[in-house]
Length: 208
Image (cartoon, rainbow, N blue to C red; front, side, top):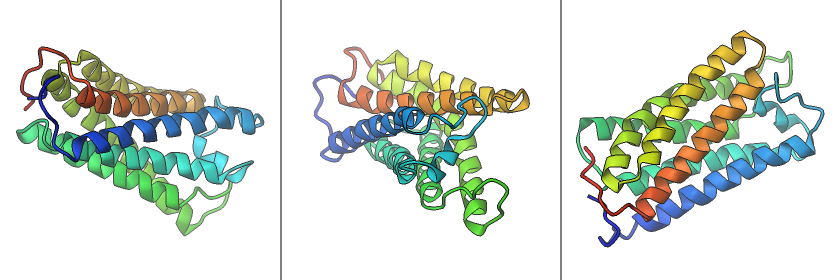
């Protein structure tokens, strides 16, 4: 159980702080690209395309930050809960984090091109996309109970909903917009989950 007065293991606080900072970095770069590359249509174009424009390498930094944030969150949550659901959720969060790190290192190919780098980018992107909502739903409710912060569970559901939204958006020509909403919800969930560990509520129960 995590309480407002209980001491945290030494590794938890720095790991949670890294997760919060990494999420802020991710969101900051995402917002900045809408100013730096106004020619990119946010309604239809994937955020990965920013890598080929002005300050494109910052796009890789943002994706890397998302991966580092998720991995740091997994470290911060390691001692918070227990049980099979908890372990599955943590494992999926680690898979998401590792996939995002690799995703950042292999940028998407230019439009119409077919490259090995682009193939790795697409594979890891899809992997990260589908595992995060499961991790967010499993861990969200458990972290909410363990810390007393209900918003973590709510945001876990939002991540799952926005994942479905991306699939629906793709079908109606609004993939870019739906993806951006998904990315914002993902970063918000990671940051809020980490913050819940740093500042738990007064009446939590054991997660598991």
